[in-house]
Amino acid sequence: FIDEKDNLPYLFKNFKDNKISDTQLINKLIENEEESIESLLKKIINNIDRAYNFIILINNTIYAIKDRFNTRPLCIGQNNEGYCIVSETCALYKYNFLREVEPGEIVKINSSGISTIYNSTNKILSSCLFEYIYFLHPTTSINDNYLSNMDIFTFRYNTGISLADNDLNNN
Image (cartoon, rainbow, N blue to C red; front, top):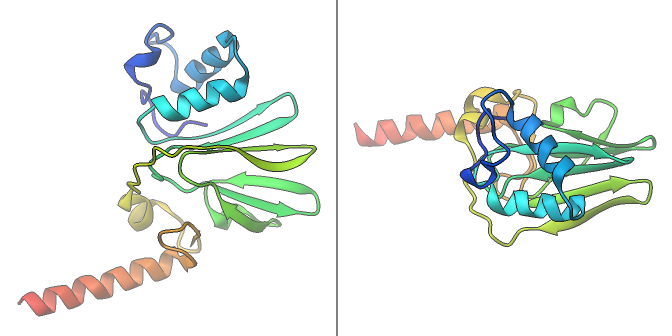
């Protein structure tokens, strides 16, 4: 899935037409790619400078792709049945949290297991504060390298205390 409408840059303008969504555009790129799907995904991750997470299923292989900016969460869960990819830990249900997809990472899951096939070195970390304050479910855990092992409720509570302390100290 792609989180936002019209995030794709001018680079892909030859494929763009006003009647298709970004998801349909990615599908067209995949259909027209003469190289491997993995080469195309590397091009996408290095050339789309926007917020997105993709989960793509091709030939019994799942690819999980996270933008280089770490804008939104993307989690991998595991149980004895296999793997699960979700946007928040609260959606893992019967799966155990394995890890967060890193910014700029492409994860491949198939019958051989799970592997990272690419991890961009050109990361520009800029998480969306609105994700933490408004959008994420309160029971979602933050499991990235920047705000690790904290649920959203605790993050919001601690942020409120910090803002109140700051306000009291400045008045």
